[in-house]
Image 1 (cartoon, rainbow, N blue to C red):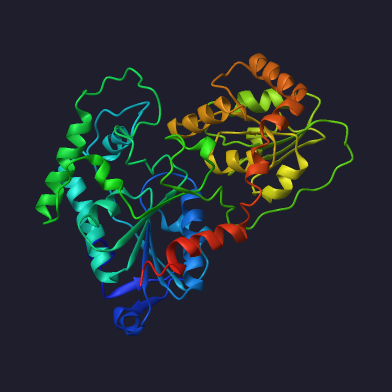
Image 2 (image 1 turned 45 degrees about the vertical axis):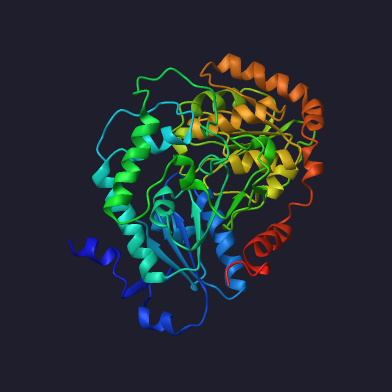
Length: 427
């Protein structure tokens, strides 16, 4: 039980280096504080986004605390000792039926536990304790609906940032990101989510909401993607920052002599149901492949390895990989999809979950990619051949990279600085 008590102990904060700092030390600093939060979602993209904002705010004199879902993952991305890393409130929701293919933000909230009153109340209460202990002048949410709920009714400036899937457009009545699919879930789930949220807020003495949209009415919305890939469609009230490159230790692309063969960069995960199908199809073609497969073991790929087919469990420098290849094969993560579009590369996507499926749908509808939900090796081979024969067409379709050439890291940093600092908004 001691661990649970210490989790929100305001007397100490844990730095990314594992050093404890007494609260009295931070209270003496005459600096504005920013609290950044990541609560849901997998992968490092959420952390990359928050780290980018944190580094920008640090340069401008902010104290930074990031409350994260996964501290171990955070330490692989965030290595600045001036950034405090703390644990976000845990969720211990009851097991219940879920939407297999949610089509709106209410369905996502339903799935993650917003209809479990006790769980939701504990989560919001935990976030309130973190807010009280840090007294931030700015809150940045990266898929952290509990943090947004905890800050309802406060005077703290709030910003949401992300690839768009978990940052709905509150001006869109139903906040839907895809067409409805038949699903054995009660039809009144939207009202259930709102009613349960209001019950939790009332118990904690916070104002209640008339609509779920109000939860996402932040002062600024920053989308780390491009309009064509926005899950909710283009919106006038958001700032499109483009995909943010992660700060990780990456290996470079080794130059090869097989210049005539088509080149394919692959980023797939072994747990995907499409992994063996895709790798089998790729290994059978006369192409050159460089593949990043996180955590891969030799026995999982030994049947695919051959000259010109390289598999690594370490990430590559993405700019070099995109400059090297003709085609990118991956699961449809928003960041790599966006970066591939900006680089003018054709893409074949094998989405694993509904967020990637939404991105894949958007990319294909815009003529930027083809996506497959097939485990038929012959079908995948055929699509690969067609794609390689139509590289020029895809490069033409992806001329959006010309529209977004300004989205460099320097431009992104200046944009965040302008939105959050230069206007004097948070002082």
